[in-house]
Length: 279
Image 1: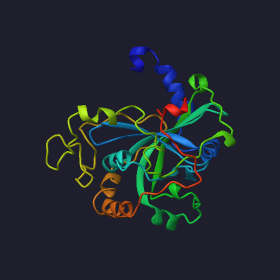
Image 2: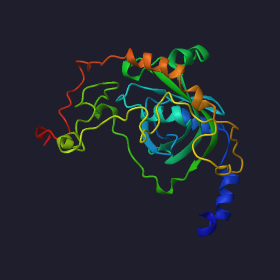
Image 3: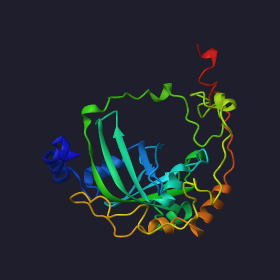
Image 4: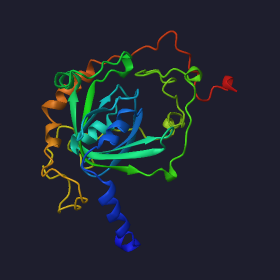
């Protein structure tokens, strides 16, 4: 595409000047102050998923110039990202500062899922979050392969609402209303849709189960795309196998211990997105 659109020289200059195989000092400082990031994953067939992660400033832990870790909080139980990572350990993170620097940072690399107790055994300095809904059940560690800037020219400037005017966030809640209700009306259409049928193991259309054997070289054939200049790419995709089998059995036991949490009595009531009393 670069050759067809005549951007090869610009791209080569960007690779040479901006794409690192590690996090430099300024990048590490930037990551340590972020409250959110966008996460991209794909399964073994290349079917993609994009999602969002958030936490207090510093929830993404900088463990070195080539290693990050972020906590997995209690969610909707779908496990789309972790399921993809169990088949394909490659992931992409995009951190954007909308309020101060108006700049972004891309981090691409390989993931490994770690139980919270194992993570703390290796990194006892990790903080313990006082908010129950923000206590990690799992951690995802990221081996950094590429880190580069997302330029500011198209990033909007956003201003934070003063703390006194914000509604309390219900971390870890199972209250449907506090999670946003049926904002997009999907549940209201459920009676007009065919019932969802979970694919059964052995069917031809199965996207890939968590406990199936993963080819060490990943899906497909061929040599694949060449690495960017300056990037380092491990020789084998052996992390996918490590994330399967016995390890995921242990993860499932941890998640099974989770129980629905009640909202705190002093938290303001959320009446739903479409409550007419809101005016």
